[in-house]
Amino acid sequence: MAKERDEKAITTRSQDYSQWYQDVVLRAEMADYSPVKGCMVIRPNGYALWENMQKALDGMFKQTGHVNAYFPLFIPMSFLSKEAEHVEGFAKECAVVTHHRLGAVEGGGVGPAPDSVLEEPLIVRPTSETVIYAMYSKWIKSYRDLPLLLNQWANVVRWEMRTRLFLRTTEFLWQEGHTAHAAHEESWGEVTKILEIYRRFAEEWMAVPVLTGVKTDAEKFAGALKTTCIEAMMQDGKALQAGTSHDLGQNFAKAFDVKFQDETGGWQYCWQTSWGVSTRLIGALIMVHSDDQGLVIPPRLAATHAVIVPIYRDEAGKAKVLEVARALKERLSASGLGIVLDDRDTVSPGFKYNEWELRGVPVRLEIGPRDVEQGVCVAVPRVPTRELREGEKRQKETLALDGAPEHLKALLDDLQKALYARALQFREEHSYTIDDYAQFQADIEKGGFFWAHWCGSGACEAKIKDETKATIRCVPFEAKKEPGACMVCGAPSEQRVVFARAY
Image (cartoon, rainbow, N blue to C red; front, side):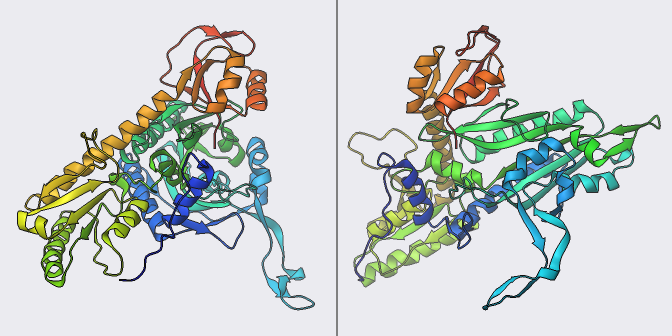
């Protein structure tokens, strides 16, 4: 047997959380750094996860009447100038195309050809409101054309100075929905409908508990009337904005002349929304669930649900075990599960255990000669689905081969629920109600969500951000009205909002 060497060791979370995250992404082969600074290469393990996220979300969008389209990567610079707040919000992040051809340069190599300057520079899309609404102004003429409910799956570019794989990169993948409506009541209904889809996806597919609420004016999307969001807590106590749904009002409609003729013959500007989630969700999933052994993937999003590891000592045992293991793989695969049979001879079962744990596969199925005789296999979930019994170091369940598909699906369902419960418990244990600003300044260092009163003043909000690096993550929808006093200035406050440091 070939000599084994562990090249996939990762830093522990307690040693260095940031390095731990990077190690998990790289060692689990989710992504890698690109030759282009600030960009990433999404490897097959990471892209399979994104495909499953995309499939689930796309189905949810289509169930509510949305259809997919695609719009250009390039946006005329003049388009961004039409909505003042929007251009101000994205101006520092834009990549600009100024030439359309390369030419030879003195000394060798190539460079932009001097005679190929574009009449108007093009922006590589940081988001697509402007180019999409230029088209909406052509397509929408009557109230009969509304609502227009489009979504696109695309890439965007936002020039970032400090990048981190999946969480913040210069180029990333996402979906962006853009809708137009005849009345504000309808568009606001769309905003909340999409936010509920994002909440359900985060909690039911990703097993990540989230808060839903409204962003403050300082934190809202550039050009929006109101931004709603889902906010998740990572294992280091920091918040991550995992999705946003924006009420654009009529701002972009007026800028791009998106209007319709109503039933009385008069002309009205449309009410619009935009909303999106990105490959940042993969970063959220990693930071919420993974551990010092590596990646943890919730079963509902896993491409591989279980790996079968055959165990044998001699050729006779190998033949017997592999025959049963192959039959088990076929039965489980036929039931709709993603199954891998790891029958490599070059590494030991222990090496395989560690490798597949690092990759986050939800369940390991072990099968040896004695298991074959008894008609069973041993299932080991990636993380416990119950309290460990006395003396247990790892949870192990014996599954009858006859009912393996049903038993495995039940175990996967238990694992999905356990991951959500574990993440919710962590969030609740790191959420605090606080009223004293001095205490807040001290306690924010330990991380977590801080529920505190805020008067609504931009000055108080800016003071807190400047002095503590904490921001208001949202004004939560689930927060009850509770008269109090702003923890900074003492002015009246109607309810608590959520403060945290964030990615």
